[in-house]
Image (tube, rainbow, N blue to C red):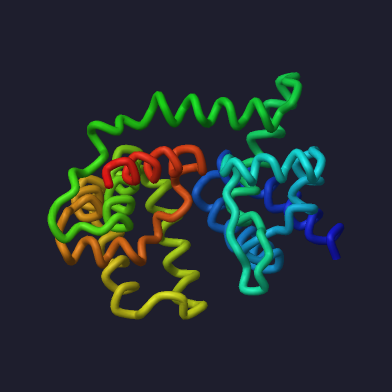
Length: 232
């Protein structure tokens, strides 16, 4: 079973690469196949499998997990596992730097991610001031979506629509919020940006079901989380 999971993940990575260079018609054919393979793998991957896919030892991976440089979630069974989306991004980035001849590829990727997080996220601009009634989770979500708004593109919106469609099929989102997000995502990019960054009670509730998950990598997300925590 572990070997099968690793083969599936390798196939998913190949399909993700093909998507980026395919025209719209071909991409629309590739995406359902990729999503089916992702469903077969499941939402998380065990550390032992992740370590083999990244080409590092389990103790080395555990150190990255302990320092929060690689995202983890706790499964209902109480195990610490890696989100599939996080692992796929890492595998692609690690393969790319290895192809460039880099040694200690995982260390190089994480170092580069931290550097980009510092260079590309202007905390003074995206970090909202704490107001009466604001909760920490709401501030994190608002800061996150301000960064998403800066990077908004037709491709990001397309991915959000696909994620929303999948959530509908799997009954992972209430129909009311699915309908509302569908309406938001049908608007021009500038209007989508205004909606997802509005600091209103309704927008705060809407962001709780945001289909823009996974736009930021773990280093970028942690930079925002740590900055919001320092405001307390």
